[in-house]
Length: 423
Image 1 (tube, helix red, strand yellow):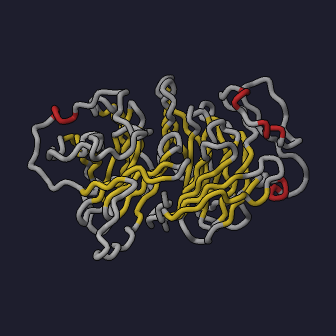
Image 2 (cartoon, one colour; image 1 turned 30 degrees about the vertical axis):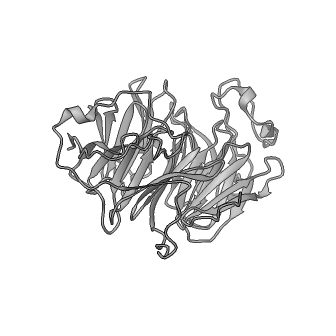
Image 3 (tube, one colour; image 1 turned 135 degrees about the vertical axis):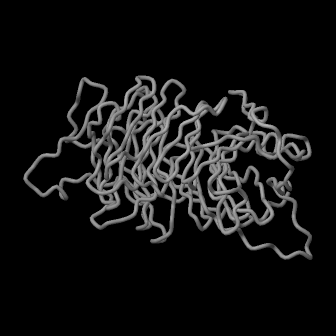
C-alpha cells in the first residue's frame, strides 16, 4: 500500500536564479502542473543539500580533495541524451554529447540509491540508498530542482526496487508489485503483481500517444505487457529461465528480452507476443546488465558481465518513417524474407545445430570483464554510449557495414574533475 504526503519545504536556493543556474538546457518542466504541496500540510524543515554546479568552483588549495563518491545506480534519461548517477553522497546529472556535468546535489552523509530523470525537465524521482540513505528506502521522493527541494513523496510497505517516469505516469516497483500513478495528481491507476523482482525490472514507452508498460509476469520467464490505449494485457512466454533484463522501443511496439542464462536475446512484437528475431550474445552464460534499442529500432545494444558490449542489427521494420532509417540497412542478411506487413522476421532454416544458425553481433567493444556497464545509443549516427559503475564514460562508433571492433571516440571518468582548458 502506498501513501502520499508533502515533503519538507525549506527555502532552499533556486537553481535557476542567476547565481545558481545548473545549466540552461536543464529547464523547468512546462508540460504539466504539479501541485503536490497542496495535498498535505508542510512538515518540519530539514537541512538543505549542498548545491554544486559545473564548472565547479575550485576548493581552497589548503583543503585536500575529498575521495570520489561510490556510485550506487546509473540511468539514462528517456531520450538517452543525459544520464544520472546516484551516489552515497547525493546525485549528479550529466550531458552525453558533448559530455559535461550539468549539476550535482550533495547531501551531508546522505546516499541516493536511485535517481530517475524525466527527459531534461526539473522533476526527478529519488530513492534513498547506500550505508546512510538520505531518504527511507521505502519512499519515492519527487524532487523539483527548479525549487531545489522535494515537493512530494510516495511511501510503501516494502523497499522500492525501481522507478520509471513518463510525463503522465510514475511507475514504482517493489519486490512483487508494481504501482502505476498519474503524474499530475498522484492518483493510483493500477497495481500489478509480479514474480519476485529484486532488480526492479520494468520498462515503459515514451511516445505521448502510446502508453505501453512491460514488467515480469507471474511465472518464470514470462513478460507482462500492458497496452493502456487498447485496454489490453498481453503475456509473453519469453524464456524458460528467469527474466534478467528487457527493454522497450520508444513506441512500445517491440521488446527485447534476456534470461539469466544470458546467451540469447529475443525480440518480440508486444501487440501479439510474436517472436520476431533471436540473436546470440555468446555461447557461455553471462549476466546481462542492459539492453537498448536505437531510436529507429534498427540496432540493439547489449552489455554483460563478460566485458563486451555488442551491437546487433535488427531485421524488424519499426513504425519509424523509412527516410529516418540509416543507409546501413543495406547490411541485411540474405535470409530475410520480405513481407507486406509492417514487420518481418528471420526464419532459421537448415540441418545444422541452432548454434551455427545463430545471428551474431555486428560490432563489439571490449571492456574490463566483471565490471558493471550500462549502454545506450548516442545522438550521433552509429554511436554508442557506455557508462561504468567505476565512473567510466565511453563514446564509441561502430561500422554498420563491416562491423568488428568499435572505435573509441571519447573517454572520461565522470567521478574525477578534469583539468580546465587554459583560456
